[in-house]
Image 1 (cartoon, one colour):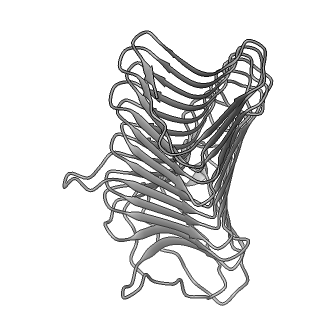
Image 2 (image 1 turned 45 degrees about the horizontal axis):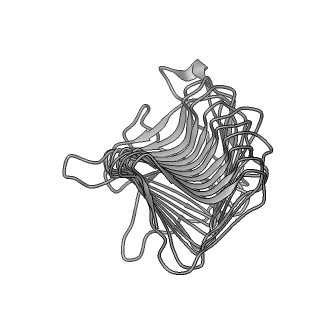
Image 3 (image 1 turned 30 degrees about the vertical axis):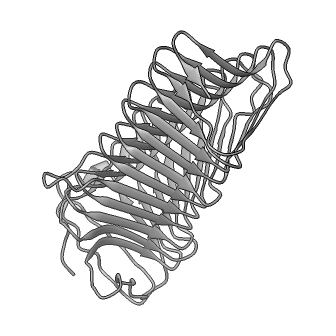
Length: 356
């Protein structure tokens, strides 16, 4: 098996033994000793092809990274740096910045019940990230984050390769549980990166504010087939956001902002060229003072499609809001908007915005 280029070149050893933990720590900065014992179940190659894997956890195997800022990086096109396969397989970073990072056409594959745990960190951390045209795939996996610092992102795709190939991250049947940290993001598409969530769950909780469930910042993010987004913060949180000409497309599923705090926004498109489309989505902001179901501002566009329902409560809450020049809320098909809070309104447009 070929080693994969990265921070350390690693070639795993396979023997016929039961799964045991793997540890990578600071004591081995210059000489990295990797002891990886896995049940010998060959990893499944893509249809019609083969791959090499730098580190493999299979059949309930465990990989643990114990040093702060541990980063697994692949820079070999077509290679899989880290393959986690099989129910109960677990990858844990006790502290760290980027735990899994694929770049330059590399690939990371996590499937069949894999758990990724990011515990602690000093801020601006990532659990799984694709950069420079790389690809990260998560299937039936769980990402658990207990972050101490701010600015942490669970799943991220950013940038593109020199040939124009976009970085991509796909998550199918995957759950993100994100507790704590200031201004965290559940899934982010940045700088032409592309994120696709299918039948997945994004949940952000904790005692800090300014949380964002899913975010497209000059990138493209798609959530479909019943993906649910729940953001419970302490105020000024957003469920799904498109900004800096980003594009968010939601199909089915729900966006829920359950907290009894101020200025919760379920959907937000901000800035010229930013677009957010929601077809058949259930949107709920039940208790936020000044909360908004869907908002377009400073030139952004929100398009609620057929089958979408928006409900708000709390004093002064709005169902649909367009504010700022050239901002637009444009409904296509039949949608439902309901408000129950005092001084609330179903639809509001001001300062050169339009709603129709």
